[in-house]
Image 1 (cartoon, helix red, strand yellow):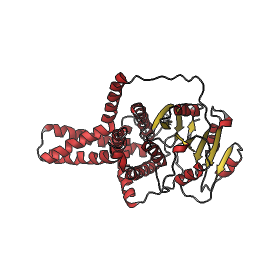
Image 2: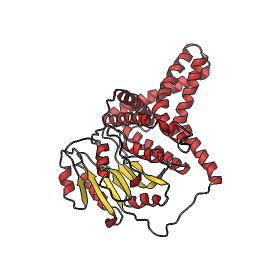
Image 3: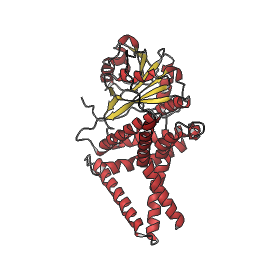
Length: 396
């Protein structure tokens, strides 16, 4: 059983490293780095107000688009330096008519629905400004978001800037909503540390900005456009900065089913992206980002879900063959954890929130979605044409 024991301990280590160990090690590396590289605090002598294009890709967002437009027009930035573009390929509701009623906005519409990636590629042909800010149609931004993003472009080595995603979770939110909020709080912390070491590992599509000259059209079947755009900029030798003071707010998914569907799509897109970014695994070619990329992204989508299953299976085999008592402790802990996750699932289906159960529930929930996403990737069943995300009612 020596081989089984080895697999068990390796699985436990890799799971812990993927979800907690990397964050701890990253923090320690940063603490050591600060002894040798002192943080530089730059005081802006004058506001950095370059011309920017604010771009929103939307599909059938008539129920929310007025609120998005009002939020966009209220942003604190000189109006003569912002070009606002909404691209709505395939929208069949009243979204286009609503947008047309605002003369400040350029509407790019084609009746054929070819997906967000193609919509962005087409819209980028109209961008004349040096920087472009992407934002999702179902998010609301803080008023100084453009100021907070563009100031990072003073550094010529910065090719993109990732904003922060915040999940608005009401007290009565369902378990999956609370889990989603907790997950993004942890992700925001990792982004902060990733950026301090070198670069954010993938910007979220809810809010990020890029240097227009660095943008290249991405393949039409790309599922995670934001992921591919930001890492494409990394591959050109530029970093992705992090602006936590620029944030996009949205409510959790409207239901457990909607959130699972979204997670499966992200997982399928993750495998697609990794298959197209294999050269990032070469630490000799990309010494600045390979460790961060593998630890923060690749391990989450490949190693950790597999090792979760292996850890349980090998643990059962070891206990069944008279292994030392330490393995029984691990087995009881694993079964207890999955029992709590199942309880969280049952409560979520009943629309009952439990702070005790939603963390294990959401953790297992994400990893189960990875397996189905991998299957969709292998069968090429995940379309790049996106559906409008169903979200809970917005918080005023």
